[in-house]
Length: 118
Image (cartoon, rainbow, N blue to C red; front, side, top):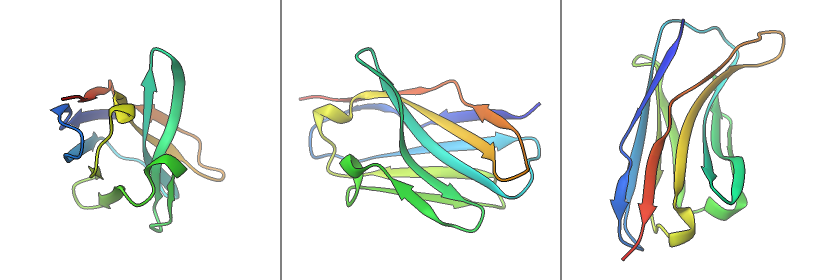
């Protein structure tokens, strides 16, 4: 059973930066997408950024130009570099790995809290 472990969340001031990391234990098959989602008490879980096994990337409009997703295939890890953070970025961030096409699997991490506040 695959397990996703997130780290890097915390409290940061507006305008600051954080980097989230997610490491996957176990094996997963291509093609796949690794991504970050976020959720608040007021909003359902939504996509922040995603990167595929061929390094295609997708970003939510609200984070374009500020956040960068990357992955390390050797470490089975995905990262989210978050710059110019705003209070509205405050949320629980979840890592996700899912199969694409005919490959069906869908794994989630436990979430890490990001709080942007002065």
